[in-house]
Image 1 (cartoon, rainbow over the protein chains, first blue to last red):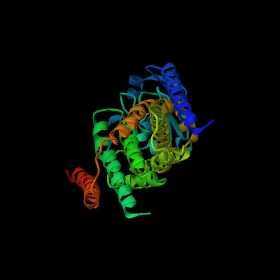
Image 2 (cartoon, one colour):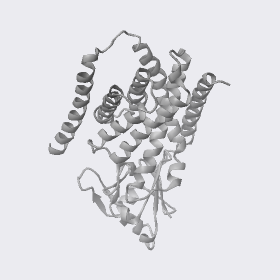
Image 3 (cartoon, rainbow over the protein chains, first blue to last red):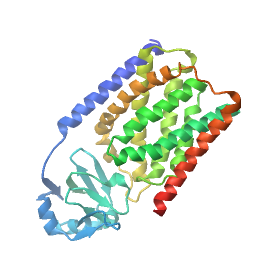
Image 4 (cartoon, chains in turn brown, orange):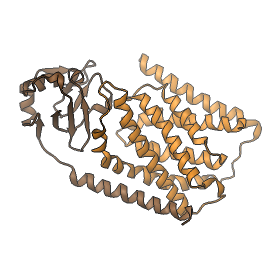
Length: 131
Length: 215
């Protein structure tokens, strides 16, 4: 088969992969008001009554301190763990304890870290896993 | 390598870098899918135009290097070093696709070939750049890179390339059609015009950066 025939087949395959991935993402997307932190279920209001407030350096983001939240939810030796933050869309980022000390969780369930780039802002968080 | 070719790389790279820094920021500000639009329209459009004009392998890698270098002068929007490297990689990917399919040897291509090329190039360039950014951003940060973070997000990355592919399907035939318009730059004007455009792009981006930092 010549390259002339290969390119349209490749283009069709690309469209098939992209379309089926879109369907998969749509079908597997979850919506929940419950957050699973260190294996326990909480609502965002419960978490906000539990942990200390924190504001980002530029005062643009306000929420609760992620390091305090981990302590209050019963994580022992928190500095010895890493933390995987997962969103409803499947996006997840793993951070260190040092990052958690600079991180906050907003009421909209978004993470913000003053020492990490924008890519670490996980939206609509559903789980914070202690590794 | 002749002087005209080098200047071609600089002008197309400067235009791509300019659109990434200025138009890309504007699109993000109005919550449009900037990544897919930037790749599907501007990156693929400029690289197709340059490749069909000069027909020389390696040109888009050079264009990506110039555009990526210009991104360093616009240090905003998260990990700008990662964006710069991703742009450079996008140029290389386009170059490999075009060279791999021996498209320089054909004087004209059918509409099916043009559309197929647009879909394939835009999609692969977009998801390639996306994956590279997802790897490099954590690597350059204090958090570190975790492969499982990338693997679970692969379906979303593959899905997000659909818009870029559809835009690419339209932009490659549009560029080929645009090239049929008999517009030629006289030799005595080639260097002043191309160098002038390049200088404008660099000065605009640098002044824009300075104004954001100072104001």
